[in-house]
Each structure stands twice: as structure tokens, then as C-alpha cells.
Amino acid sequence: MECEFPTINSNAEEMREIFESVKTIAVLGLSPDESKPSFMVAKYLQDAGYTIVPIYPKEEEILGEKVYRSLSEIPFEIDMVNIFRKPDAFDEIADACIKRGDIKVFWGQQGLVNNNAAQKAKDAGIKVVQNYCAKIEHERLAR
Image 1 (cartoon, rainbow, N blue to C red):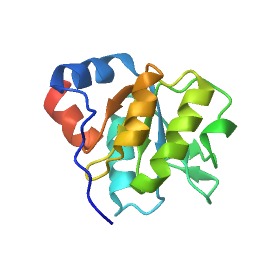
Image 2: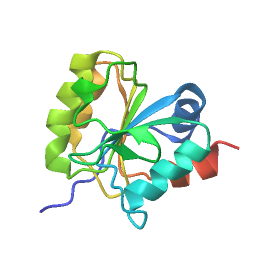
Image 3: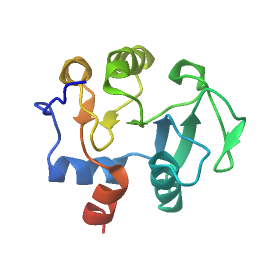
């Protein structure tokens, strides 16, 4: 797989605004394994006061929250998606975010970039962050 450089991205000030404005974060690919980055980041964000909504193909509950199989199954408003999936899944995720109409932030975790999906999300009015860890950036910016 070829690595892609993020050409569409938010800057530090925009990320600070994201952390101040979002309340509910869907975590796509949230593993129940406590040693996985997705679990550690979601737990950190939950402990920081955000409502976490796990999206995972199995399990019924992760971090004390009901697990959903897809964004379309979630029956309430989501402010941000934090993505722990391979970049080739980003186009489909961007489409799902746009279809929902309530998602304000499309966040690809550190090492994850898909500029085509990012452009699609941005064109729909969704803020985009790629190749940044939400935990690290929150620790750095939201003081």
C-alpha cells in the first residue's frame, strides 16, 4: 500500500475548536482489546468528557457503551467520527457521514490518509483531520 500525504487537513487552531465544540464521537473500529490504540484513544476521550459511540463488527458493549455496526444504525446525533480503519474504507465512511447530515468532523487517526475521501467530506461542509492522533492532539491543545 502506498502512503499518501494529507493535502486536506485542519490546523492546530481548527483542531482546538473541534475539541471545544464536539460532544459525541463515533469511533469506527473501536476494539475491545485494551492494548489497542483505538481502545486507548477512546478511553482517553471518554475520560475527557466526550460521549463515545463504538462502531465495531462484534461485541455488544465497549467502554460501557452500546456497540453499533455502522454509522447508519446510530439513532442520535453524532458530532465527529474518529476513524481507526484502513484508508481504503474512508470513501465509504465519508459517504455515510455525508448521508447522515449531522457529522461535523471527519478525523482519520495518525498514519491514516485518504485525500479523495477528505475532499468529499470537506466539499460537504465537514471539517477534516487526517494523520493526527485525537488523544495526542487533545492533550496538546485542549488545556
